[in-house]
Length: 89
Image 1: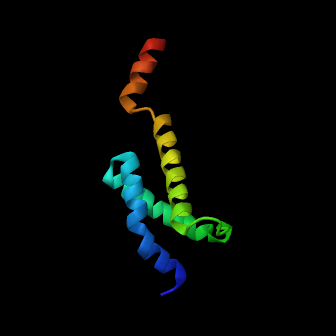
Image 2 (image 1 turned 135 degrees about the vertical axis):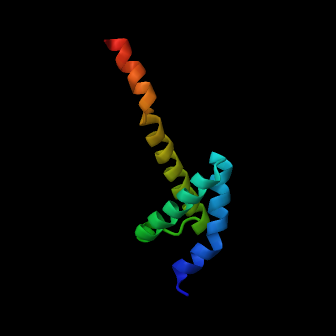
């Protein structure tokens, strides 16, 4: 087992529980946990080692959650678009 696989095995439950505590949505926490480890894999060369790996991963997870919540705020439900259009015509 290579080093990154060992990090994933050891840290996945911690990152998942961290995200779940923030968002209170198991499905979203699961999705963002996967995204966290994907981003960590892509950017492992940026890990400087001045903190624990799990701290670095939790920061990536927090950033992923923030990005997702911002994306969701920009989405306007279809029903609301009709209400907005009706007000302008």
